[in-house]
Image 1 (tube, rainbow, N blue to C red):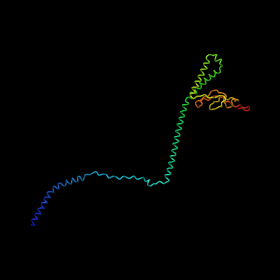
Image 2 (image 1 turned 90 degrees about the vertical axis):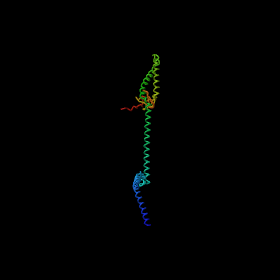
Image 3 (image 1 turned 90 degrees about the horizontal axis):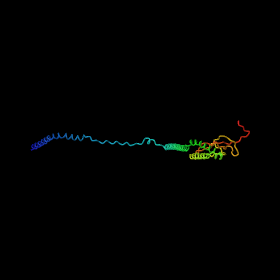
Image 4 (image 1 turned 120 degrees about the vertical axis):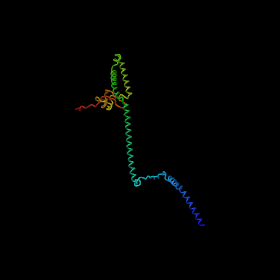
Length: 243
């Protein structure tokens, strides 16, 4: 009985080992593929995210950490800045003042050039006015009887007077006016040109005008031509002799 059980047990062990051996080739064949497939997935290199570099914290400058300004340093720096600001303000004010002066001078020069642009022409026209005036004075000195004897003299005299009036009005429009210089007026070297000296009289004291040789003219506020006059001088005593 015991022998039968042992045989049955051995037969079962043999069958199980045979079955295992039969099944082993398939396992041996399939195992490598399974391992390769497993290795294929395991060997695939996935893109690993790069580790984020730690952001460098901005450190304050060492000078700010190590050097701490004293209480006296800011006061000195502020005083220097204030002095620089004051100097800059002065320079700016000077520059503005110079620019304004330059503009003012330019405007004045332009106005003067426009106002006195006729000065040269007016000075030349004075000779024409003088000639007409001399002619009118010559006719005025003639007796009326002679003017009536010669036919046409009255007409010439009238024409000369008209020319004189027209010339004087035209000059007045340009700012040219005749000076009011008469005998007995105080001599003014800025407006009068002394041609000769004459003895003083009771009516005309020394340093006064005795005669007017040629009339003077003004253009605006300038002297276009000084009046040519004679000036009275004090009488010399008998004891005074010139060397």
